[in-house]
Image 1 (cartoon, rainbow, N blue to C red):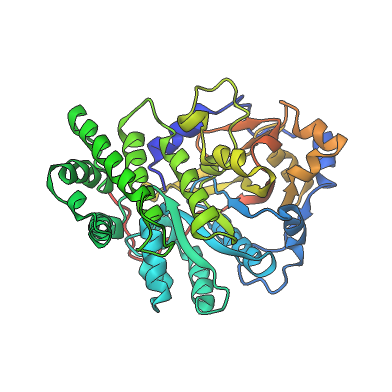
Image 2: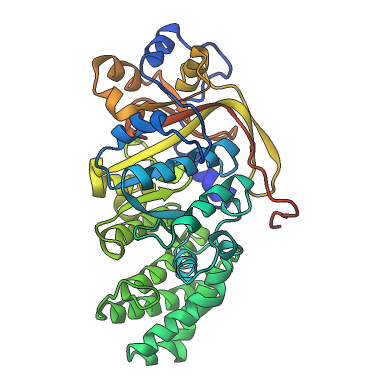
Length: 441
């Protein structure tokens, strides 16, 4: 749930070859694509038959982390489709944990409350990204979580992002950390000058203040954060909220990463790298042995390693969460994007309705549209393994548009280096907001 400025700066940085819009796709590409695409019958999360998702299930295979991308945070049919895919992955593929692109503390606090009996959607208000709980299309996801929350194998609903102004984070993160320290005999770290140095900057991050602290304050924060992390490293991890040393270490790191993303132009990817570290901790340790779904903007989920010409990223060169996760998990990480030919989407910063122009020439979307299929799925990873598939998907002439903004990204081949699976919806529709909802600012 990034602010548009930071997301669009991220996407623009990796934009390539913005071709002319609305031109006819090459007939050869359209014919090849028609033979590869599996039609999708519905985006409805309540669809009674999931036979049309069997190809998606085979493509996922034995992957233990599946990332479901979205282009703009404001697409009705994308939200519905992703909710349907979550249900399918939970019921048919054994996935048990859903990580939303929202603050990690907010997500863990939310799930703790849901387990105690709270309704998931109501508990998420003011904490999770508002497009994820105030969009009408998202209701089905929360209803599904509630129906299964007391099952032997519930769908855990939580989050993996750095702090983004959630009410739970602002009210409870720092008091919760102080309480944990006191409970482990480390109360001296939660008082005095060092604690004040840490909380002064942390409170600014949690409130999403645009004005950066003074350099001396940031340096004092970094020293205090390092002392806290070193102390917590010596505490055994119980892997249960809120009694988890590893969880609190990730909160300290996440506060620092979000601050760097907001205030340090030299570290635009710090948030993405921290998201990946949070996912790794949750998948490998906190929820060890469980399969994980990551719900995020496509720009975070895709692998950007192919962009050799881009500036070095944060944390060893990574430029996106997906790039870092791809390095860590290889083929066990399966990343999915949703693309459309034309339509409208809702701008998540102010609620305005923006047009999605007709797809670019030589793009998969244009070829898909030319074939006349309104919805479908393409396993890029599998198709690329064939000679014809490699010809089209590895060609720089073939593109896919993963941004609906005029200054966004049109990604050129090899497309399989970015994403593994692609869902197509011919006409993008804007998310519908609940009556009475007002966008912030």
